[in-house]
Amino acid sequence: MAMVEGASHIVRHGNPAFWRLLDKPSEQLVGIPFCEVLPESDECVTLLDRVFRTGKPEAHTGQEYSKPHPVFWSFTMWPVLADERPVGAMIQVTETAQLHEKTLAMNEALVLGSLHQHELTEAANSLNVQLQRQIAERKQVEAELRESEERYRALFELGPVAVYSCDASGVIHNFNRRSAELWGREPALGDTDERFCGSFKLFRPDGSFMPHEQCPMAEVLSGKISEARDAEVLIERPDGSKITVVVNIRPLKNQRGEVTGAINCFYDITERKAAEQRQRFLMNELAHRGQNLLAVIQAVASRSLSGTRPLAEEREVLMHRIQALARSQSAMVAEGFKGARVEEIIRLEFDSFSDRVKTIGPDIMLNPRVARTFTLAVHELATNATKYGALSEPEGQVTIHWLIEGSGAEARFKFQWQELDGPPVTPPSRKGFGSVLLEQAVAHDFAAPPKIRFRPEGLIYEIDAPLSTITANSAGEVS
Image (cartoon, rainbow, N blue to C red; front, side, top):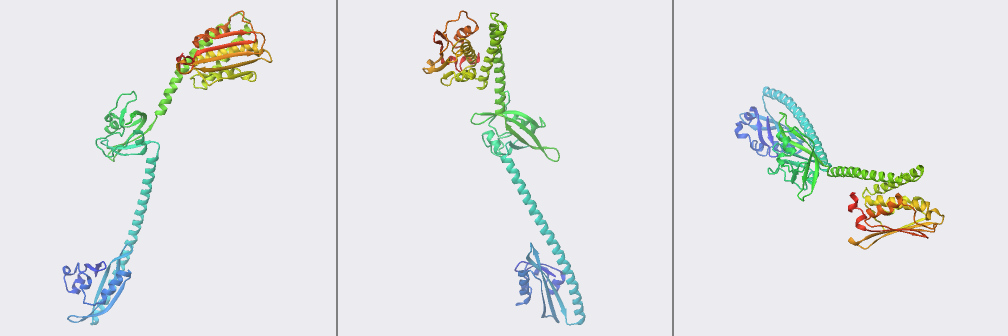
């Protein structure tokens, strides 16, 4: 028996019977082409080429050689396969003599050898099947692993949460796109001079500077804390901008429980912090404005319930004045308490008199203090016009117009209320809360005394005030 390899049929292995048959030691035969072992122009090499090319077994018999006595050599050849392709061949050589005994012995050996070769072939085929199955399974596992890695990488890169990891010494080994966006930069992976975090600078929630060696990632890796849960950190970017993030850090451990690194998931809460700050500001502002409003209501109630009129009438007057204040609050709520617009204040007061009240004027937002006073003034003017003035007659009308005169620091707000086609007008015989409001309160909050003219054809009420004093964002807003 012998085994040869490759298209040149290099002899690689043989049993002792093979070496004895050729009458040469194995050292002289291993490593040389099989054709050099045989006589020239031997058909055996041709068959061996065909076995290697086709992958099918062949048999060759009847070659006679002259030795001490005539003998016959018979060859049986089987291909050796790898990945379903021939890579060599197994050769069985049988020597037969003319003597009957030797022929019988050789035939018996041939039968036994064939049986053994059949067993070897079946074993080889079984091994080939197992190998192919293992290769297919490995390829499937590799494909599944690549698919899993692609899904992980997609989630890692496209997720809304920033994620990065460090080894036990704090060197950054990986980070996703969102991390770089929040840091405002991309750190060099594996840089031993840049550890624990890829941010430019870090600060604590109280604004104090936080060295990278004291950040939550460093504390988890050092074992100072077991993990970080919802810890707030301020990040300063290279361009100087700052954001607030919440970090959650978990350590990575080996089978012995040793920390081999850590992973940090963090997200931006800058807008949430700003909203919380705005909410606190608005709550404080609301409390401040509520106190001011209560003071105004107290003053209105005190002057409305003066005892100079029947109690039922005074209650009605107080109710309407408080409703006017409520309308001013509604107008300011629409503007986020920054103030109220002149046109909106007048619209809310005269919603039921739209066909008899004409208004014209530009868009002007009064600051909260002036807006309350202006609302009460318009309410008093409307009440007087309804009871005693132009709106008490079916044909009476009220014309309201305002404008801005001048520009810059010299700009002025001019407002005029004019009643037409009402009953004859005469100055009031006494001054109540309405007169005090229209004269003194307006003069104080508008920084200019109003003009009131009681003309027979109708009342004219005018305000001429500095624009900077009455508009939103002026000093009067925080009063």
